[in-house]
Image: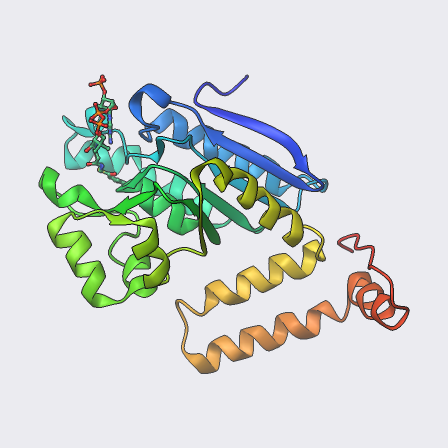
Length: 259
Ligand code: DAK
């Protein structure tokens, strides 16, 4: 069945796929169906050997203005428990290939959290990041107190989470939340360009390197270094390592196969 709230663009550059959130009238509010479609599309692209890097965008006005407030408003704690939205977010967290968020306009609440689940963020000058859940009488529930704090530090995270203030793309860049700020007409193009450059690397090395960087968030330094070392050794069992090093000595571009 065709998804209703996302559009999948295959091969927007060699080995790069692009998923666009597509509920524009609701500023891409993340309802359950959209999140399910996004999870399924990401899992499918993660298993597709022709894809090495995934770009995730909304539109110029909104990456996503958060979880769908209207859908959540009347839910009880038991409903929320039974719906178990976390399993969807956890599945997205497990995607092995790099995901680059292309953010323009609002990235709020769950939208900001979704961008932080991605591995790099390219934003337009008009992007606004925020965790305004506090204004709704709740608090972030999908990483907004944890990933945000690790990215921008306690002072700014506290301000965003407790006051609900949105930050600009420039502020987000200075705080280390995002990678690049570009003019609005270029944000998607630049994200795809970064994805295309990343996609020239060994797909196996990309996945293992992503896994190792993410490990830094939930281990001690010693355990993280141990994990890094194991992935480093493991890559010497790959054809891509032989090809990459041979290509260097032969002064040519490597041809990686992911084997
Ligand atoms: N939910 C539902 N509809 C939304 C929405 C949202 N988050 N954000 C915007 N819309 C809808 C508006 O209701 C409006 O619909 P109509 O009234 O036209 O039918 C349409 O999008 C256009 O919005 P506005 O007319 O408000 O547009 P403005 O430009 O005037 O304002 C705005 C833009 C982004 C400042 C404003 O729409 C706004 O404040 N939106 C809400 C932002 C927000 O509070 N976001 C946080 C939501 S709570 C979880 C995972 C994640 C979460 C929870 C649980 N689990 C895994 C369990 C996340 C929670 C959240 O994100």
